[in-house]
Image (cartoon, rainbow, N blue to C red; front, top):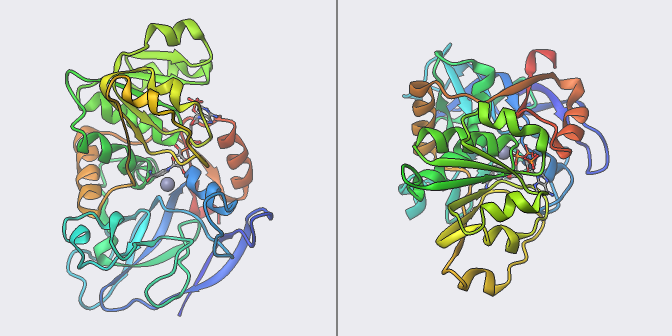
Length: 345
Ligand code: NAP
Ligand code: ZN
């Protein structure tokens, strides 16, 4: 077995702390990555806190992983030692169902294996990227360009693909008015991709203090959602709302901002939604959802980012400061993604 070290939550109530554990040996189809940076996603906190379902503890979070390959199995074809590589939210799937064959492994009909807080096909719990090394089947490893800042590339593995995929699926672009709801890790990537795809982008935010920064990200307009006058001015105006909010919010109010035939795309995962049918049928509106993205599309997104010089705006932290980072993330005080420097482990 490979000896690994990381930061783990021992249960839902205790702060993360150093924890030593084992990873499997590198098998014929595996790649071993020495992790250099790992992004901090709000999903990490949801899962540590059992917000969605009872977690598997000890839990080593982290699914925005980048680093350098240190070993490859005998049958590995796509990767070589010393190359940069990334791992996102999944590390395995059945690979034979119709969704997997379509490159939609996130919707694997057998259920995909999550990078942490899951169990591999061998039944062993998976441990994520708040650690120094990881072993992953090559089909779930991504090529990372050396043209971009490596640390700022890490959040693309979740925040990037989770916003890129729905914008591509719904063909959001020139001629569309896109609202990005919530300007955190996902939201700021949604702004960058929306702008890159040619949409007219408005940020809907609870934080007036983010106005200047939103414009710097490329957003064309900024609306503070606590101001009724600003909301009234955008009523019935958006073709799409990309909803990245992590906490409960007034869906009926936001649906009123869509124009006829508009689509509200949920990517944030609050504990619940409450939608009145009138909010949908008055204007033939749709509410949709989207989960991360498949492996081929994740590689497409990474290549698109390398070509267009798109990375995440990050604040680097030492791993010992992870709890402070969580506290600040909950308050919406992050510009726009914390990334852990794994060298501080
Ligand atoms: P984040 O960085 O904390 O950003 C969330 C943003 O939502 C905050 O910055 C804040 O922006 C806004 N917000 C927070 N509470 C709010 C409230 N009560 N009402 C309105 N707005 C509020 O989180 P993240 O990492 O981007 O993740 C966002 C959500 O997406 C989480 O629930 C996460 O689990 C989920 N997620 C889903 C997928 C998927 O596959 N669909 C993948 C990754 C993450 P403002 O300050 O601008 O208001
Ligand atoms: Zn995530």
